[in-house]
Amino acid sequence: MEKKNIDWSNLGFGYMETDYRYVSNFKNGAWDEGALITDANITMSECACVLQYAQTIFEGLKAYTTEDGHIVCFRPDLNASRLADSAKRLEMPVFPEDKFVDAVKQVVKANASYVPPFGSGATLYLRPYMFGSNAVIGVKPATEYQFRVFATPVGPYFKGGAKPITIRVSDFDRAAPNGTGHIKAGLNYAMSLHAIVSAHEEGYDENMYLDPQTRTKVEETGGANFLFVTKDGKVVTPKSNSILPSITRRSLVYVAKEYLGLEVEEREVYLDELKDFAECGLCGTAAVISPVGKVVDHGKEICFPSGMEEMGPITKKLYETLTGIQMGKIEAPEGWIVTIE
Image (tube, rainbow, N blue to C red; front, side, top):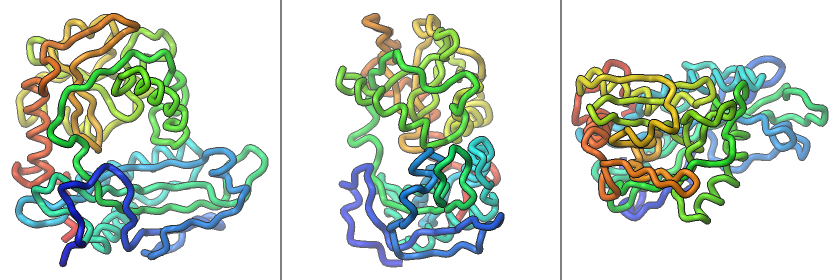
C-alpha cells in the first residue's frame, strides 16, 4: 500500500487524524457487532456519565513496520486483558478480549498507509478506550457504553537519542492504598496533571511517587514503571498492589531472564535503597525505557553511576533486545508479535 505523504522523520508525539477508527456500542446488556467508521467526532449527552463521573478507561499500544516489511503489533492480548481488568474495577462491561484484538487489527489494516516505514523511528500509536455514554445524574455506573480505537502516527519519543532524565520525589500521592492505581483509568491521569506540571516548572522531567501509606517505598511515575539495576547486575522492579502492571515492564523482565540470563527480583523497593543502585529506568509503551540519571529527594541528589550522558550498560542491553524483538531483528517468544499484513 502506498504511504501517506508525511515527513516521517520529523513527526512529534502528538495526534494526527487518520482515515478510520473502530466503534462498538453497549446497550441493553450487550455489545453490538462494531464497525470501522470515518467520523472522528463523538456526540453524546451533556449529562453523559463520562463527563460527570469520569467513568472511562483506556489502553495504548503501537503498530510498526518490521525489518522484513511486515506491519505488526506487540502483545495486544495483554492490552485486551488489562482493559478487561480496568472495566471490572470501574463497574463497566468487559469488552471481549478477542474482539479487542480484532478491532486493533481492523484499525491498523484500514490505516496501513499511515504506518511509518521501517527505520524512520516513527510508529502508529493505537488508543483503545471505553466510556459511559448515557445520561447519569445520580452517582452510579452508566448503562450504555462506547468502545473505540483510533490510530495516529507518532515520532520517536526521544529525538536524537535517549538522554538520562532527572526526576524528583513527589509530595503528591499517585494512588490510594486500596484505590485504582493498578488499572488504566482516566481519573488516575487527571490527578497526576498538577504534579507533572509543577515538576516541569521546577526543572524536573518526571515524578517519583512513593507508596501513600508509609511514603518509604518506590511505586512508579505518572505513566511508567521503574526498573533498577544493582551494582552486581541484578534487575529489580518494585512490587505493589497500586502499581499499573506495565506490559513493557513485564516483557523486559522476561527478556532479562530468558534472553540475557540476568537475575531478576520483583519486590518492595525502599527510597533509602536508591543510592545503592547502579542504573535506573522508566519503562512504558512510548519510549520502552527512559534512562534516569538523577533523583532529587527534596534537595538531596541521588546520582546513579550510569551517569547523565547515556543509558547504563544493562539498561541498554534490555532496550536493544526488546526493540530488536519488536522490529523483527531478534526472534520473539511465541505470541508476542501479531502480524497485521
